[in-house]
Length: 310
Image 1 (cartoon, rainbow, N blue to C red):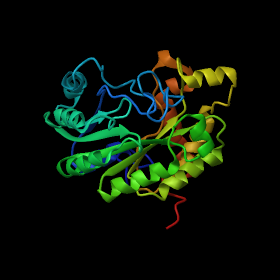
Image 2: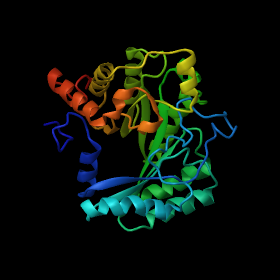
Image 3: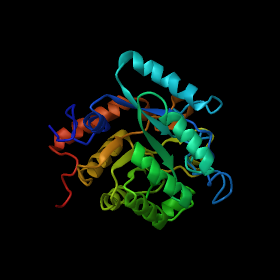
Image 4: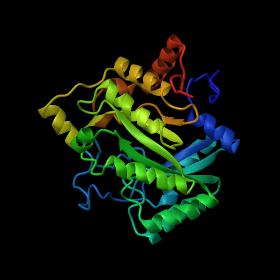
């Protein structure tokens, strides 16, 4: 059995990490803090990244028209019936969750931290959207709770970053990771496989770059072409190759081999809403993708970190 797994996975599962850290079942409860994004409101760009939905990649976050406690309880109450002793991490998911005044950030974060059995926060944001005063506050927050900052990188390649309208440089991301780690704050990075015109080697280069940074976790997504996005328009006007399930599984297994075993795999596939999905349709069967990754690692007799040089 792989060292960092409780269920015969050959990679470092989030379930293993939470169980060993908190000695309990732990769930992330997705929330919508009704934030916007500097890449939507004109500060750095307009329209957002081309793959981002109108919900700001918060399809499974709460309803922004409901208060945060109501959002949290609607999820927690369901989970609590099956796992009555579970603990929770508030996950600020939709849009850019450090992009607001400090007073508003404090009010929203601490509303969730004050709820019963909440052991931490996970905050999704952009590396160009954390102010100096916010860094100082995150430092304080990290002392009193388990804090993770999730950064949407997607790719290290400049041409792709421009194409997807990311609107910040790789150096900005790298400096942000260093600054967060200097404060001892955990960092999880989002990447996307299958971005338009990227080759397998480019996707592996992104992972190899991240493996050399002091990150604690990674989310690996498959590119989803969703309705009413700029990516949908690009795909219709200039069709690009969509990875097959077999190609995706092969790439993910290669990527896992180049990641240090200590890096927690927070996600290993995308989970789009069926009604919004244009391509790829194989993502609808999420567990089939997960099972095929497991099978491929067994077939290779491989595991996370196998190709990491000591």
